[in-house]
Amino acid sequence: EIVLTQSPGTLSLSPGERATLSCRASQSVSGSSLAWYQQKPGQAPRLLIHGTSSRATGIPDRFSGSGSGTDFTLTISRLEPEDFAVYYCQHYGNSPLYTFGQGTKLEIK
Amino acid sequence: EVQLLESGGDFIQPGGSLRLSCVVSGFSFSNYAMNWVRQAPGKGLEWVAGISSTGGSTHYAESVRGRFTISRDNSKKTLYLRLSTLTAEDTAIYYCAKDDRRTNWALDSWGQGTLVTVSS
Image (cartoon, rainbow over all chains, first blue to last red; front, side):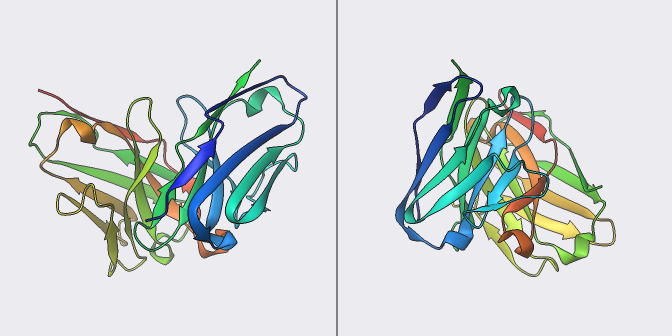
């Protein structure tokens, strides 16, 4: 079973700054199976990135994904106030079908 | 507009059973695999179960296998999750979510969730 470890647990930044969130897999995974989600308090998760680097419909281009093998990154180029939330990486596999990282909380500094 | 609406969450005693429903609209339900994902209070996301578009194939997380049953009725555009032998560890918001090969099977649409609380 693949384990996804996200870092840092909490990231404190100011609007306008650049955010870099990390997701490390316990073994090499296909880039096509790596996704990122955003979740705000009281809301369902929202798909941001699929296939490591493809933005989902309606996602602003300040969100970008990269990586390969075991190391993947979500970058938010210039933080907007609405970007402060919890972010999860996710892997699609065989057993279990979906594995999520434990999340990174992006908070306002 | 794609919409998923869960219902059926409740306060239930340990050992009890419950059935959750997820009614969808805005897409061709019978063409898509569907999933249930849960989130315990203050915790992260945990995938629970998935079902193919026809219902012929199901998958479960180890933590719920043998206790939960996922099913669907394509004529009613409804996804179900039967929960049984519930424990406090099953307390969570349960989300239904659609996946799509066009997004590399990522979960591209989610409902708002329904809360299941297991407590004596």
